[in-house]
Amino acid sequence: MPYQEPPFTMGVEEEYLLVDRETLELARAPQALMDSCMAEMDGQVSPEFLQCQIEVGTKVCQTIGDAREDLKRLRACISNHAADHGLVPITASCHPFADWKDQHHTDKDRYNELQQDLAGVVRRMLICGMHVHVGIAQKDLRIDLMNQLTYFLPHLLALSTSSPFWQGDDTGLASYRLTVFDNLPRTGLPPQLRSWGEFERSVQALVGLGVIEDSSKIWWDLRPSSRFPTIESRICDVSPRLEHALSLAALTQCLTRMLWRLSRKNQRWRLYDNFLVSENRWRAQRYGVTGGLIDFGRGEIVPMGELVQEMIGLLAQDAEALDCTAEIENALEITKNGNSSERQRATYQAAIATGKTTDDALRDVVRHLIEEYHADL
Image (cartoon, rainbow, N blue to C red; front, top):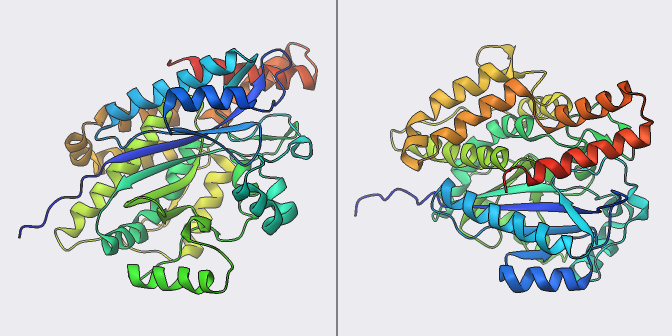
């Protein structure tokens, strides 16, 4: 039987923060809001760990065009129903001035157990992310592609960063979200695994001890999904702009196909030790698109614009096959004009330059995030 190409279907999950339209402070999602969203979106929306968060997930999408249509509908639906309660969503990985100590977790068994198990660490989880699933039916192929795709996680993170502020302070980082998330167990870069069997044995070792109930409690930057036959990238900050989110999803899909395509010619991407890849992860977390990443083959730090241009060339064949050439090329615009972290900082600095107080400048950042959420709807 001829070897069939995987479907490379995709799904996108996004986590949003809800803010009061007048005060711009975080606000709890009332049950009536959740009920109306669930009624309209039929299982595509759910509460998150904190009461000020809400999560959406697209259907299984064949193309990036399908993902655009579904994600645009989901974003618009959340916005419309939130407006009925004087609320508005933002898509940034951290609220610019909220204090995590003022937030409360959602009263559901899963979240109550997290609160019990992870104690003070999980209380600080006032962060939002974006997850991209790519359909790969064969289990061992998922592991093989995951090992190689890990190299590109810092590139995706750098393009996505949207969390420079934390509790009213500029952290100096492009993604403070990752600093918070890395305090949880079973996070960070995935280990290099030899097979699906090795992955399952490792998971079962913890399940058998009662440490976790299943692999959904493994929160690596990239993992085999616990629910779907997919590779799930979890590295990205959530993107305020819809089109930037779609570019990141398209890149993830194309990178996965490119690595599969190499495997059909008995080729593969070189595996680097996580010690080295972690250095690029840190650079992406710290600098976003402004500091460049290490090209280990060349032995030098290369600007993100050059790296993305090379990536677009590398993925051209895959983007054409998956009908997402425009979306991956849009990633170059991010390197030229800045990602969300840079735009948030620019908004804050412009407000300070006009004589506004720190508090008012931070509220301008929230207004900016509201505008970006709605720009493409």
